[in-house]
Length: 484
RNA sequence: CGGGGUGUAGCGCAGUUUGGUAGCGCAUCUGGUUUGGGACCAGAGGGCCGCGGGUUCAAAUCCUGCCACCCCGACCA
Image 1 (cartoon, protein in one colour):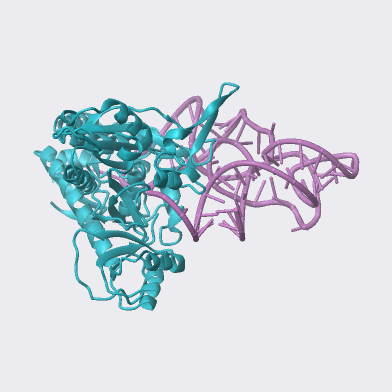
Image 2 (image 1 turned 30 degrees about the vertical axis):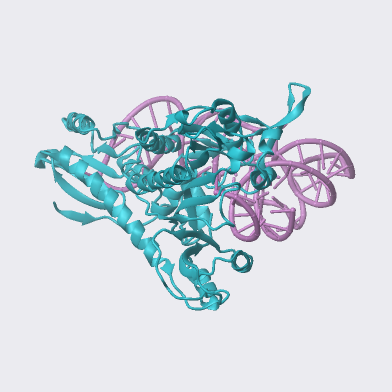
């Protein structure tokens, strides 16, 4: 394989450079690559086919894993009576400020107003309460794919929208141990999805009490670090203990004959993940999509396609790749020039571009260009299918590794609060530190700097004996960052 | 909710200071030549200048009220 670099430009004119204005770069990328459009209602976005295909990829992976672990899909209603939402105190306090209300049916005012679900714990609990009678029925392992509405004040496509697509799993179990095992199992599936599908390395751990889900006993999270040093919560799994089952009077007759409350979990991942994919992998030329998620994994661009034999060769290659299960597109349109096509597919993040022209046919080769590194190489035509398939895996591995290196480079330790503040401003990223575990200390840091505890990682290290923020004895190691 | 910015053709913008025929680039349509890194020539179509009120012979432009969106903060997946 001979290699040649073609990096005459590392940006395109349509997209703001990320080092100039990261927020604008993000907006440019999603708009120029046709992932979304803004709708007439603020905060509600249209997900266009190319963007929706990314969500379908995430859905397919998770849905398969959910089912492999014994879960079933169901569907619960969009509207929740106010009285149900109000049953769990912490929950309603957490969500009330951002729920949307339905007050009329046609022109008639409703006797009780209905909220559009911001999440479905309450409606699902009301049904579980009706259904559950015996320990023999447990566990309930249900999931639903739906959208929820949270009336956000400031919104950004994928990262924070007033309506977003997600899945929410809701399970109840006989024992606390089973619920805890379920909570952790689902978090691990999210992490597996992030790393194997999205090529995004995650830090997994528990949320502080301040950051946990409204109504949860404990919230677990996977956190990713973006190009700009801000963290993105990418999936959460909650152990709800008996908070909701008691509030909703969900009971069953246990093995001893006594009435018991089951132990509950809920877990979710949303279209926000797509924002993460963009902010971790993409560059100034546009999207860089991880191969297993890319709606088009390989695009074949025939060169001088009117010349004899070119299209036939391109077609044969297309069929060969397709037969290997590769999502391949042959662009034999004539409206746009070759150069235009190169730029277009690069902007759209297609992992591999293959060029087939008269010269290559003569030499028995094809040209393969990697989107992630922009490297172009010559591939023998015989056996090209297998070579390309392997290259897709290599690209995935390389992207994951680069993201890991980038994250680690942006992860820092420090000795004093002042040093922490300086580094957070000058080289933002994950701050790895001991913490006292006191809520007042955490609140003070947030008020001072806007930085929050992203998680208390499972992988604990002992970095010292005192909390560098307040001087109290250290309780555990945490990752801190500014967050989306 | 605070601070900043922007609304003019499908998209991106100029024009507004100093009122006087609605402009440019890209995209679109027609015909032709092209095609190994965003092609070229010729022609064509496309506008409630965000919305309402006012000033004026005359308003994209001046005054006034409203609305929407974007960005940065505060709060949340």
